Image 1 (tube, rainbow, N blue to C red):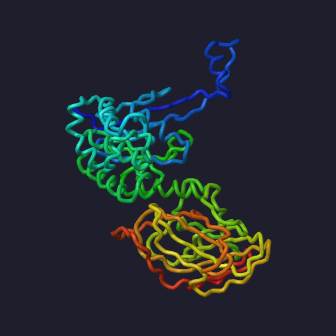
Image 2 (tube, rainbow, N blue to C red):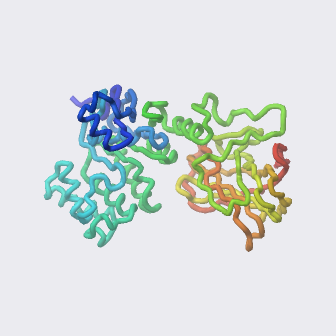
Image 3 (cartoon, rainbow, N blue to C red):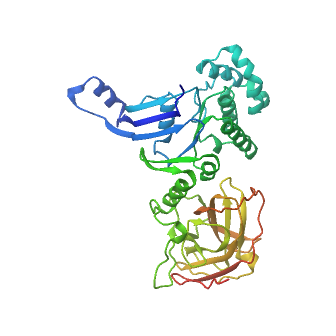
Length: 434
């Protein structure tokens, strides 16, 4: 009789012994003076969950939270230190880039090598070869050593091998983040096909959009433990808010977050320490926020609406002709909308060295696809044709767009309605009324 679950984990734990020097490992192994030289690192702590047959489960969490360790245990690559795991069915896994590939062998030889690891004969893999080569689509490189492959070619071949062996359970660790847009689309279509055929899928991804669109349920791992579990959209919203703004699990919806009472100061948050920042450094964007029509900072926008994108900027050098910009970018890196003060002919005032201002763009976000979006901000000195780019922050602020509308995926730059700009001295709320 078939069980209702494909995977069951009970109180799973994984502990590594860490050493300050390789010699300390040897000393401890030889029981040198009975002293312990290692310290324990708990990659997983008391992890329990169940995955039903035919379910697609997303696993999210920041780097080092234990996601890859968990998948390796489920794939049979690692054994747990404590607890029990029960996996029912043939597992095909796509773990870190190139795992299980011999770099000295050609792509073709590695296809048969992967098949051997999964228990297939050479004749059985020969029957699957045409499908693997067609999906990977790497041409004559299939006969070259994989050590010459780009990361995109690596993952193309690995994904093609993983999905063409008729697994009951497919485990994917961040593979969808590599490769061009066309290949990612192929992967999404294949995963949809697997879901419709009743396969079980575990997906680790930093893309909240992928988790929401592909998974029915999600688990949030933090420091090796399950921090939250439930409906995928809710878990992604909670994780995104915590990751960007360190506000913890949301009690009320983020759109109901309160602004500061009794003053004109914006409730801005510092630019994340991991943000992607470029530029000459003559000015710095130190804080940002997205605000709704009521002046409340939000991390979730429920459908189209009037918003303000606000940034706090500090000049390190005099800026004679500053202009400000923003862009809204989706999880695939596609720019959807944006504006700058040069286009608006706003003519912001010059900034003295050491001066800090709060600048704001006010506009209405139209209907867009549900998912995660980044706000990129910029501060430049000069004109559109001749300027110094002092700072660009590619991921200054993150928000979720959640709407009940059946909106089709957009792939082109959207035209914004009327956009207004205002700038004032620090801690004074600009006039951004629509």
